[in-house]
Length: 354
Image 1 (cartoon, helix red, strand yellow):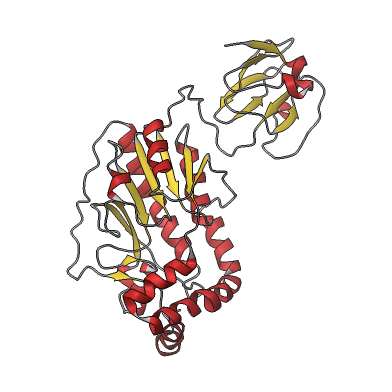
Image 2 (spheres, rainbow, N blue to C red; image 1 turned 180 degrees about the vertical axis):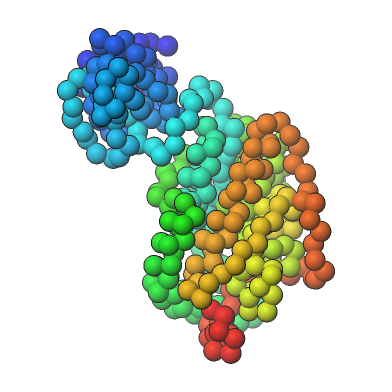
C-alpha cells in the first residue's frame, strides 16, 4: 500500500485512489481510502482517524470535539490539513477484502434505495446490481393474453391514473412512515447496471463477484439459470403473507378481502416461481385510516427489514437458512395482481379499503 502526505491532495492527479493511504502531518494518523473521493472537508491537524467503509471520517483526537468532520455533502473549511471524505450515516469498520459478501439484485425505485441503505448499515462491500425497467408495452401484452384485454386495460388505468393521484395524496403519510420507522430513501448509486436480471451479462457478473448471499428486490421473475449460477442463497422481502397473498399489493388484498390479520411481510428464499420459495420469517402489522395502497409498501418494508437483517446475519455468520417455525394458516396459494380501476373504486366505496 502506498502512503502519501495529505498536502498533495490539492490536484486531481494526486487525490487518493482506492487502496491507497494518506498520512496526516503533523499527527501522522493513517487514513485508508476505500473508494474514490466525492467531497472535500477539513479537520484540525491533531485529529485521529476512524476507518469507515466508503468514506474517511476524522474524529477529534486531542483537539476539540468541534474538529469532527460533519457528515454532509458540503465543503467545509477549518484550519489544518485537508482530506477527502464521503458522507455516511453509520460508522462501520473497513473491510479491505475486494469480494462482496452480499449483492442486492434490484429493480429501479425508492424501495431499492430503502433496502440498499439499510443493508449498507450492516454489510461491508455491499454491491448493488440494478436491472433496467422492463417494457411496459410487453408487460401489457403479456398480461392481456393471460387475463384478457378488458381486465388488462382496467389495471393499466389503475396504474396510470389512480396510483399517481394516490401517491400525491399520501405524501405526508409516506414521509411520516419513513421518519417513524427510520427508513432512508436517499438515492443509493448502484455499482452495476444490467439490462435484465436474466441476461447473460448478469450471470457473468454474479459468477465473477461470487457473493455469500444475494438479496432480491423489485426485479422481474428470476430464471433458473440465474439462480443456479451461484452456490449461495437468494432471498427476498415480499409485500404480503405467502402463500395466500403472492404477487403484488399483498396488504391491500388482505384488507379488501376482510383479513386484516393477514396483513404482513414475508422474507423467503427465491425460487423460479413467483413468491413460492421457502418462507424464512413473517411479520404482521396494523394499518391506519391515513394509509392506502400507495403507502402500504413502506409499512411492508418497515416490518420486513428487521427480518431481512436477521437472515443476512445468519448467512454471513456461516449458518444455514432455516424455514420459519410458524405454520401457515389454511388457505389457497394465489397469485394476485393490480386491481382494475373500477374494482378499486368499488372496493373503496363499499368497504372503505383503499
